[in-house]
Length: 392
Length: 157
Image 1 (cartoon, chains in turn cyan, yellow):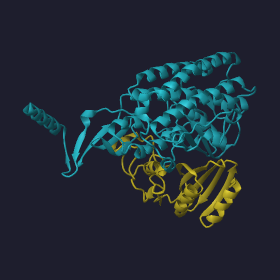
Image 2 (image 1 turned 90 degrees about the horizontal axis):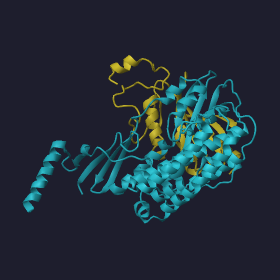
Image 3 (image 1 turned 180 degrees about the vertical axis):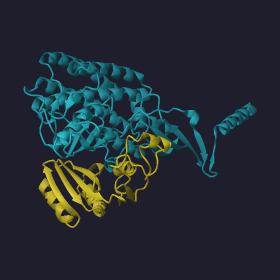
Image 4 (image 1 turned 45 degrees about the horizontal axis):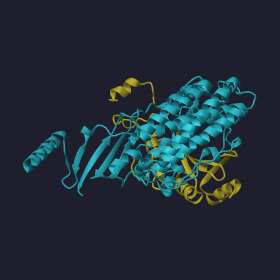
């Protein structure tokens, strides 16, 4: 086939409030090339962080992401603690783990809901987001905020968890498990979901390694990598939990990994709440010596990596932030190419874009190197209508 | 292989490439190597030792432009950072993107933010900065005047 069409998605897509621009080159129904453009939301936070003190930076980087807002402070505080190096008090470790796991549950639920929405399966969307409210309530009880918890600081946590809040939280967490089970059953047994997601957008193990894919994206492809297990931090080594790994690498496996991970997160969160050790929650760090430190933690989407260099002043000399999506987004090149355009939506839905701006479609004739403008397309369409009329 | 065996192996294999080894803690090792050796060292650690490429981070210091290439070897829970120091006037280094895709985007980012030229990169375009951003202005360099807003506006950004 000689005719290739470019389908632009973005730069701002209406479903999820994230600006990104995908250029899909399609031949008929088949996607033959994809190019991703990012940077529409580049706020220069790395540079901003160098102008703030170590304490203030925690607040700035919490605003990098609204969904996994704890993962960045977690990695950053660990990087700062790695410079000195110090270990935070046990109680602070447990509180950090509780917040991080609560965030994992609500982030996976949000993704699951959106994935259902993308498939046109709005029941999953409604159920998942309704369930997410429960866990957000728990987070509000624990930290005072539904999101952007501001619990972390270099050397410990900012606020303690009151022991009288714990029974209520446990009750709420227990109450979501039956609904989670129902959701899991709905996802695993549903023939429509199977038809739309099985064998679609396969990321092979070799490609996952080549792209150094992270988090559920890599674990669905059989790459058993999880920072929580490999380089344990917080209270993860004190809890019994399983790393979820599946082998097929398709969209269905990515759903399964995330759904099953929520059960593990519930387990970890409950264990930490019930066995919260007594003691200090903060080391009260006064100054950070010169040096460099690395902090990496397992965020809901994969490993978040922070590198902080200190020159002995009260500000970081360099602060490098690497979010998991930075490594996962380029894998589209391996998963989308060769699939049909209708499946591309679901494959891209791992990071939730949407088709829009259809009027900005440009048709390119490869042989003649002709680019059709909007007027040409109107003319073509009128000619086609005329042709159809003639046939009648 | 254990941690000490792997470190010994790297030290012996790349004796002439390694300038300095800083064994910071059980989980972290910083190894400074010659810039021209980055490709063979990375290829060995990525392919033979099955390390994961975390990311690279560039820093502009007073004397040189430094890049740290962070690799994790999960089996032994070790994060190895290879440090290279590049000439400030014309920073150049071999690209790692032909070896593994994971290095593709971060090299594009360092190219635009720090002005490092990656030789042999398949697709060295801008990643984050807008198209109108002036050529030769690198926001993460020390000499970049971040509050000189007027100068940037006059260039059409």
